[in-house]
Image (tube, rainbow, N blue to C red; front, side):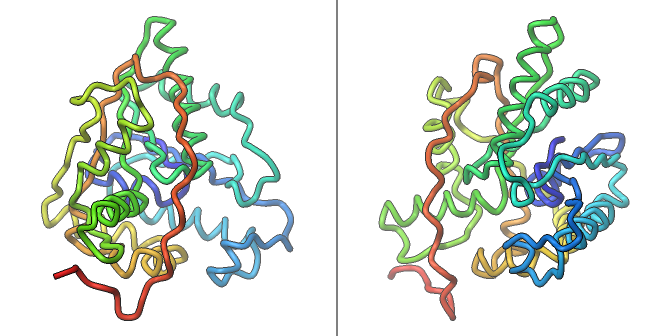
Length: 272
């Protein structure tokens, strides 16, 4: 399972973690400059990005503790720490070697078009194409990126005039079907529908505990999602796609969605 950043897998597909599995945090590199401070880290109250990156490594290890999943943190730099795109050639070789040892790989779908999520998805698919050409095709799954999927669902509600504001409810797989059909236009209707996964109460509680390990990130992510980040009804629903080989070609993610308005106080409600 490939996680662009330290929290993406536990946020998005915690229910798919299994003892004996492997998770890779791709952009887990630590900046060398001890004085450098990136804007996101500054927003979160960090003194330096180096300190923040080291703390995120500790948070990541804590989040997987007790899952039976082996965590590997790669040293590629997060987008906010780079001056350009990642070295996708080196990343592809690393991903190909790791995927080649497994029968199944989970990649982010890149809902929200975050550059790091796109890099992991598209580079991972390139590695899968190379493995398929060598006669070793893996099973590929894309997971819906949480909480980015809440933006997609809320945007659909607003565009259909169903709600007066952003809803942040994780219960509209049709929004994900529409997103997938737009970004993977060669997909059939069945291929575009995400597979829903309903987590039981114990798994949802364990997922929340794992997410809370990312204590530097949770407050701002929760604020940006109207206080709904840790809503059990949201955490207990996960979505993924089985991606057949004919959809492994590069795709155009399109422009990123517009940012949502700042959360109101109190949040707006449903139209009556």
